[in-house]
Amino acid sequence: MFQPGQIKDYQALNTALDHLLTGESDVISHLANASSLLNYFLDDVNWVGFYTMKNGQLQLGPFQGLPACVTIPVGRGVCGTAVSDNRTMRIADVHAFPGHIACDANSKSEIVIPITVNDEVYGVLDIDAPITDRFTEEDQTGLEAFVRVLEKHLAQAN
Image (cartoon, rainbow, N blue to C red; front, side, top):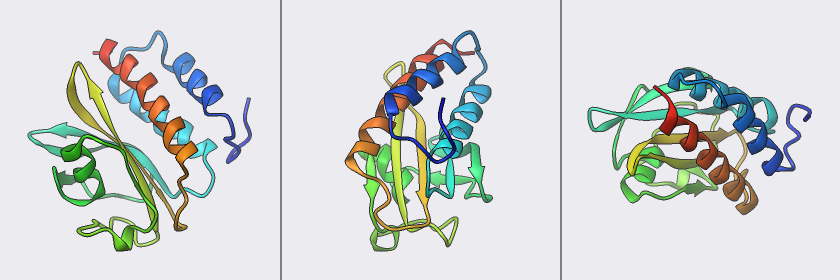
């Protein structure tokens, strides 16, 4: 299929995610496998994971990488801003982002994509990189499609 760090074809990755999640109904398993898949196949990333909405704020979910911030208020940092604005945030230099929450000092760029299930914000996919300007428009498009596949399965999960 792919070699580690060799994503060139997001459509193939998204098809792999769809096959991986089909027939499974556990939310935690979906998020854990999705973060593992991305961490394994994306190059130059140091954190891949999910925050889900709980009690009006983002709560740490399954991830790959160093320990992370446990809760993030909506509207704070890149993740909280992605939720409050309901849009993908592709940040070339996190240190230039006002209010950036530094969970890993090695992170230099970030992409955060909101996840919506049944017309409600479910959480975010958050990916950090140890290099500036890591994420391209192609990455954004491919990862947004990845999230759409995940949303379909989350909507059917327990």
